[in-house]
Image (cartoon, rainbow, N blue to C red; front, side, top):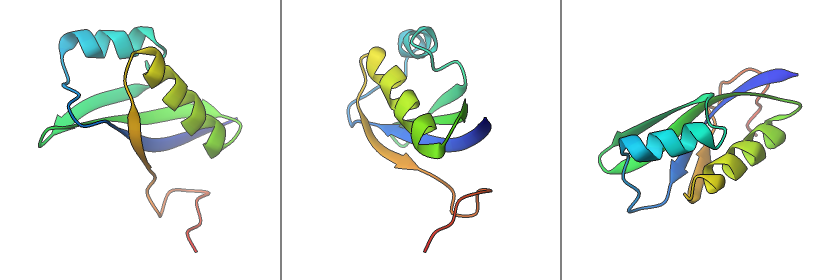
Length: 85
């Protein structure tokens, strides 16, 4: 398995609170670092999986378990193993 780095952005109106951070951790996002910038809450993940798709899908499922909605996934174009055409 490989480790994949990516960011998930949560829906507008989501506020990063201590309670949300705890809920995300308990839902399985213990490999993510939540943060907030200009009112946008996002989580930077460092997730081990068989593929990038599997990593992102499992992270989205964990975020949803915490009661949040993901609106965007971002991957750095120069990340190892990622090819942008």
